[in-house]
Image (cartoon, one colour):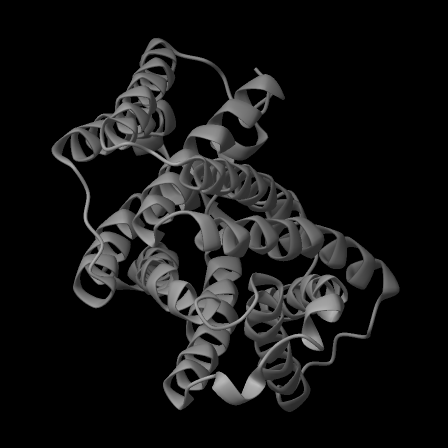
Length: 330
């Protein structure tokens, strides 16, 4: 019997993740350009406010018989306050202080590490020697990375920006874990719309004081084009694809894909922004990535025995490795 019927469900989520990471990588460069002309609160509001509008239109145009639920709005909105509002408040603020290339390395690399730590501490995943070694290696790589930054005479502003990037990574880790629970009872587009809408509203509230002081006439047309791209590509489409992937794979598997973001982010930052990095920084980043991979990816000997297991509700098929990764209490 042919296995083609199972290829789609297995490869689809990973294709969504790849597209998402490409878009996320370019978002660092585009967002850096925007915060160069607009206050970071306003830039974040425009990006996610525009994305919320796009998602609402998609939700209204899509034939969906699911009834509106205040519970869904409350739960998804709560997740959005972390993954959209808190994450981007830290992220955009960090862009005003540190190079975009720092963020393209710190956020996607530390997010999987922090996700793994949270899952281990909460008992949802079990500790193993490779994971402990990986976490230690990741920390060592981080030390080397920041030493590399300091070797070039790091400023207090850049250090503050990097700390904000770390906080953003922590927010994304929480978002990844919490989103898995949200998706158990919600369609991805609806969950993404509610989360983005709630986060955008919170960002708008923080941007109010800066709206009256923004010199809108000095904003270049190219900046508006980049803002529109950020709202549609790395935000509306990327968040929707990320939710669709999480509907099948677990938070750990999803965040592993973030290791490709530094590549896209670094290349775009160097090419379009003229940013650079030292050899020590590159070595530190590489060590951290290796450590993160060891901490996140573990071999499961039982995976090959069963390709997939049926969810308790009988409506969702999840790869065994991911299922075990997300629900194990042993």
